[in-house]
Length: 277
Length: 315
Image (cartoon, rainbow over all chains, first blue to last red; front, side):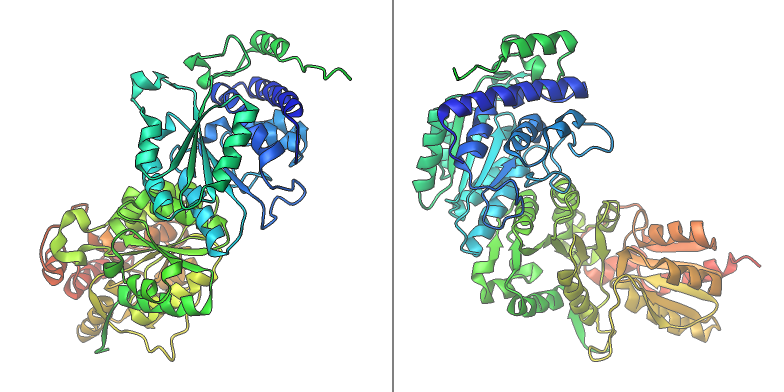
């Protein structure tokens, strides 16, 4: 799909609105780290990735693994808007007997490539998928999104070592670097910096971008595609809670749902901008 | 009997055969390939072998991703690190999405020997058994190992296969052995008591049964190669038919085969059940034989348990 930047901007607003509505309806969930990743997901699903919503099991599709599985509202909203399942499903988020689990379930949700939620594990699975693609000499690519707090998990570094060792140049990982985690700022909870140096030292190509700029995201993904012999880490500087003024840069909005009034206020800020047509 | 094979050796050989038959078979190890015997596969199929280094969590997570990509991964390391260190990736990345990963763990139990308690995994059956949808297998000899590994490769879903370091007597004739998924094997018929054993304890159960015959006790002997799903019918019939049961496993008596059998019988056919196994303790360094004697895993211990079980039978 070749959405223009303008179209992507509008899609991003729709995704943000859905995140607010889903978490409000569910009375739980993780809006902060979902809002920070909206541009990355929108760019992947509406521009970068080779996918077909009508054929979620298509063998040659690109894969996306949401390693920071708690941010699934952004994934679900994106998949629904892209046509993987009806948008009505979104309001069943986190409800009993419904499809959209509190953390991604690959068996129950079309388009979800890996069950994640326990931090640190999705990157390993993405590596395995990239290895499978190489074994089969397939040209599809594997993408993953890792959180900066998630980088505190040892398993992330096990996987990062292996991805470089096996030269997984078909693997592109985004780091949603919003600087915050449940208990506060990364630097207060457990220092993760210097992240770029760490991944470079592990043998990765590292790009650092503004994670809310579609132009930069698209350019970085293109660049990653051209890099041979090693995986690429795109460190995307983002704002937790992006797009909703009172949620921005507030760790408290990591895992708290908006109440009625907060939802209304958020949606007011997230009016879909008319294209002028 | 007479010929001795370590189940890990049979595993290594079978993997190579499977590798020749099916291009989708891939093997991962965590720097123990010479010990787990996956090195045999690695030599013949270097492109389909992935050494993940000393990183068991990533070993399991990567295997999950390979399975999601259509491969049939066998992930091997020692039982301690596979099921201990990597428990959660096994639970959340393999079993929860029901991915087609085979976890073949070697060096289970006390017979690891000299490496001592840190490496003697006595809890793996318990922690694998409790995971929803996980099949748990523990073959008794080389022939059964081949059958189990082949069956696991042909089954779509997560499987844990428990293998040992030490050589064990060959119990089965390869030309005659018929493996049935989820079905125990009755090796001796008997009417006074049933010994239900798994892994290396099956050979000892047979030895105990032979000796018991001399004192007039006819023991039925059942080999349970698949601990989950367990053969409820066979176990129930054995309890009803013999009135007393002894279980034998190279594992903690908590959570393993003995627990699984007691769970079945508590619900279906309550009879005295005596569990032979490691009694809520860690092991230590020593030779395999010394350890088996010290921790009560011998034919003699099974006989004593049988005598207690028979004594406790309801009139």
